[in-house]
Length: 251
Image 1 (tube, one colour):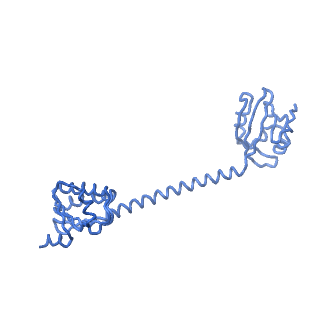
Image 2 (image 1 turned 90 degrees about the horizontal axis):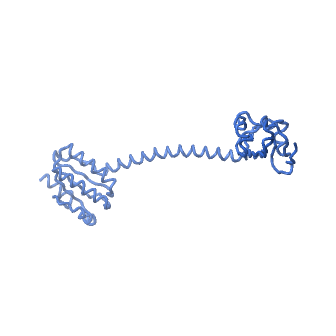
Image 3 (image 1 turned 180 degrees about the vertical axis):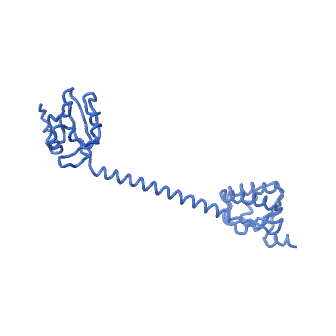
């Protein structure tokens, strides 16, 4: 049976239900060569799929498959299949552009590289966070001056994250050393954020409730305004300089 497919400017074939090629366009003939049946031109790995979907019962279907040319080249294609009746069906063959496969491969490689990069960045982020934690801890070293007195010099800007680390370190060290008096030196402190003030209030209150005496020295005028926000109803003594504070304990 001839169906005059040659008017179609693409690869198309007409087959019967046994995959025998009844008619084809010149483009399809060039692609499939001397194959008597369409199935014989299908690459072995795609044959089960083609058998499953290319049959009258499925009426219209689109699927991907691999074809083998007369020269033995395996090419990826997309098949658009339609059955006019139980006797014959038409298959339009769309050859997939190799550049698509290349781009897909490149995208897959890029995703893999991004995944590796994200993993590396995660590792670097963890290292950075550890370094920041260590920096925050070192921003308030706990220096035991005598059995009952400890000096805690504060460094840099005081914010919630830094004060959270400082508070944990100071409370633990004070309890471990059984220190009675803690002297906080603000000489090297920069700005004090509102969140830092709240954390200072919480730390000083905890120390006072634990029975510690809290002394603060080295406060600059602009810092004094922020520290007034503490409004702690506990005894905290302010000393104008570290020198005066040290003299207090050694006179």
